[in-house]
Image 1 (cartoon, one colour):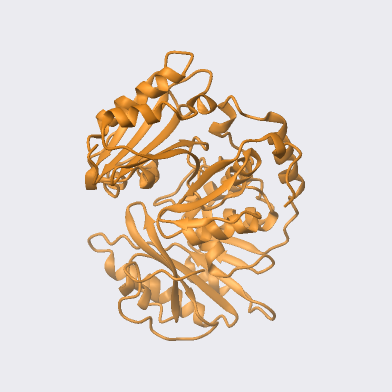
Image 2 (spheres, rainbow, N blue to C red):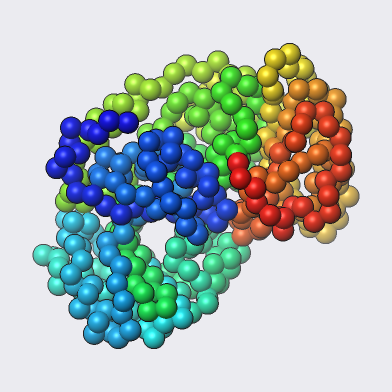
Length: 439
């Protein structure tokens, strides 16, 4: 992709697209498709770029949680050293003209082990750089209790169950609204890394999902399922347990070439360095790339209320004409599918896997019925997100893992059909605890 005419005067940054654990390779593939080479690290992908690349990553990445600018990396084993080096960072380039600042601090295996004390020194460095009074708040993860880089899902969780995944003991006192500037501070083995968040709200918040059904699937995870499955534009796709429609909507956005961040705001818009002309240019290119999709994308669910919510979400996403929603049971929706004469059709779904008292028989029957219906559809392949290897074996499908991650604090794996029509029981041990494969 040729550089924008604005690029010559734009500063270069060390950038990092954070992801849920297990989705790094998929995000790296997305960056590659944008013409950017990245380096996979635990919890995301590191890459270099100017403002144009920063804007592009926020606008187009479907599986990343946020994009941060790495302001600096240095050694510090004393508070004096931390504060002295922190004062040299270019804070003013990332401080909005108004509004509070949030700090997220991790301290692990370091002499500076107290996150609150670290936050106090960093706040001092920020305050001395700013030309205004800075309101601050901080959250800390000390030693092995959690990790700031992997706290995005905990930030998004509205209950303690999700937060437990990231340490359970951390808390955050926020001042102001979502427009506050977040800085992330990590100290591991006395090596300090400080980053500025450019995204604001987490990137899965596309803006269309105003209504959710039970156990909603995060948009970034739905996009990861689609990208990792092997589904290609032009192939039919069905989610027979679509809930509020996240999988069909994400597929329709991809098929139509609609940037996932097209309808939302980003934190970098509040920076002094924000280039409105460059951003509008980037938006214009994104809008001009939208195409009318003719894909046969369907979503069904036996819950009529969920289907109605899904249809309204699709309308907000601008893909209502691309998706056919219906209120049906799993077996009925699959039975209506025609065999695919050329190419492949896909069933991608996130069936229930949280087993409550008395649910186990119902869930086993559900998975068995799903497998039975799929085996009657030559040419159709399946992609299933699950946490339970015993349940997935009920499908009697030959499935291979594409990635393992977490969903709502539950370890899950995404598995796909090896070959259409093949009927083999999944081996013991493959599931949420199985290894992740490359997409």
